[in-house]
Figure 1 (cartoon, rainbow, N blue to C red):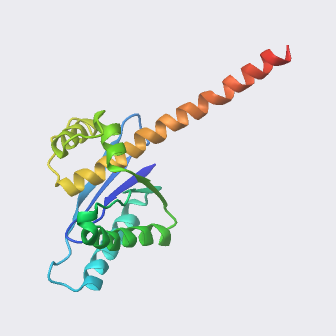
Figure 2 (tube, rainbow, N blue to C red; figure 1 turned 60 degrees about the vertical axis):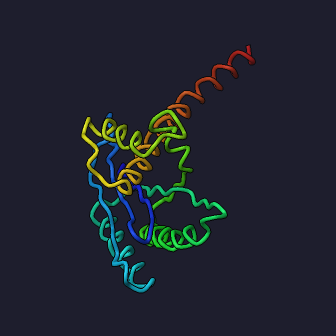
Length: 179
């Protein structure tokens, strides 16, 4: 399955796509969408929409992973502006019937590095290792998007493994209780 991670923002929206079909995650592509800073809000959002639509058409992901929206009382305006870009990403996913998954930044860092308070540099280094030992040459926005995708792939695999083994335990317990 192809997973598209998106780190939305009005100045830069990072994206990263991976393929989870094999035993390891394989990088498909990563980069940034950078709308003109001087443009009107609607025009900037249209650039994000158009580019994400093109990426979705090219890669046909099965899921899109976003960072959960959070805000600090000192940065309410920043969160509101990011919410516009995030809404565009959700719209693109809905238009293409792609499942949207959300994780908190700390959950992603925990899944990637083992520490929920890891630095951007630590996350970038681990993403490079997860994707075949590559040196992290992406922007932080693209790296964050790849981290979302890789974290989701790992958590999804763990969930599927636990679901695979859970029915056996139940059946075995039922057989013991019936005897």
